[in-house]
Image (cartoon, rainbow, N blue to C red; front, top):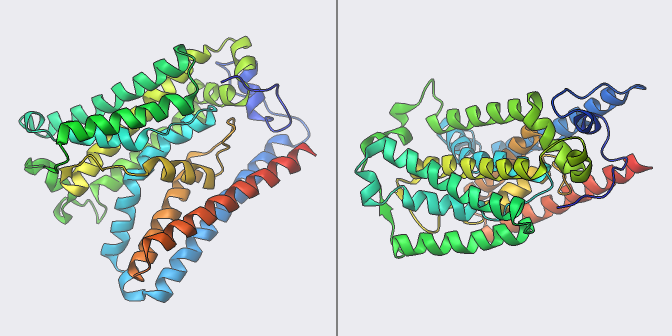
Length: 350
């Protein structure tokens, strides 16, 4: 979508990306870069403080259960699946887009990868199918948005409905049980590496790669540039349409990986998999400091947002609090994060 002319909110490295897509952003005089770094550090430290406070609450309310090694491993494992989706969502939002279909894409990829025909090909067949289905769905989104000039909200909403419907048609409303031992073994304690579940390691790899792409590559600078001002990015020589296509492909890829991780975690494929993942991923990205208007965001912040939400869910479950209370708490956190973002942006403009 077309963004307004550059304003004070898009300063520092964003303008550097517009000046030369293939070059790193130049430093600003007058201490602009250190100030930006300080703001980012304060935001990350604030998130770490919130996470530490939640750990303290969990340790006080249910010390034996919450601080148990198995429970901490469970929190990290559950955060890993939605965390991978959030990495892809962060890129999309930074570019000024949105993807409401991530949960449905996870469901579609998980059920397609667990059909009897697919399971005949074993571990490789399941993993390959999950990733390919995610990429295919992301490709459809990207083509509709980048070359069909559809609003991302509408295009991904249509994909949400279509993917959910197709997933339901494939399963006929039934749960598809995984019978491939090599897949199921990844979720067993015997497969842990130094006490770390394999799914957490996969998540860590995705986060590291995502951070490197966003902060150390031309692709990342172009993503920020497109989100900051798409027209200025086009005039600077960036192929905005192709960049958006790649971003939705990246989101689909993350959904495919998350679908495989969910298959390992649940041992099955269901058309209800990934329910509300789109809301959790968007919320985690916002909590982490990603602007819904585009042009700014961090992978580290998004990961901390995921850990905060997952920890809240775990604490509520251990204390036998109802799910509606959990949703209210999450909603309050989202509202607070958006208000803080708005206040921060108004402070920069004055």
